[in-house]
Length: 310
Image 1 (spheres, rainbow, N blue to C red):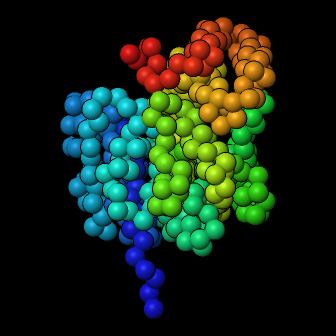
Image 2 (cartoon, helix red, strand yellow):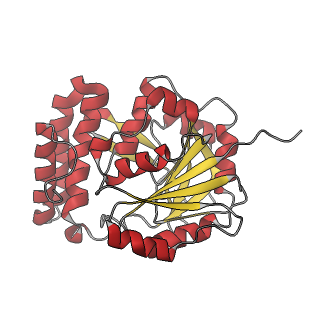
């Protein structure tokens, strides 16, 4: 007897990066798991939407539909994901994928296989660089320091992996590749739109763990991730842009406030010390200013669209 249908909707958020999206779709078109469609939310306005429509096919080689949606303004990453997910309310699961990724052909099949065991409702895999170095197997949030730890960072793809040990430690799945099912959405809800950019997947995973849901890890779900290409967070520390630094520091404090608010006073002081060390000790004074302004916005509880985009 064949397995019951399990349609997956792949959700991608675009922002002035039609060519990058086309590359991601080319990788998805090689997937060995074929019961899926793709929904792309363009946050960059009508001109970017037109470029996106011209750059991507209406169907992949396996016949899977590709739908492009124009967001009513820049909704941020969380808002764009939510819009794409709402467009497919009948999906069995949703695979949130960054536009700067190239999933292996077997990645989705591995994620679905792990999800369908039934003991977890959010699953991640292996994110890695083009040179074969692991970016993360999963994430571990350190509440007292308001800092995220990428489990497995720096390992080689050929290194042995203990999935049970990773699942025991991880308390969130990195947002570049995460598969969630209907029960997850029914119990946990969607991402928090007001985070706009950064840390939304951390809060989502921690919210699920707080409700008692298990997170899964699929070691065969390998996804190459060209980290930071869309937001400008990659590269030398002195060349990093204001937006990703500001949003990262702001939203780290929101994660603590929203999940474990009683820890916020200590976490806020720890974060201030850490950002000073990270940027000040390296002479990245402009970036230190960006981080400090984001930290202060987090202290004040500012949410939604950041002032530099308002």
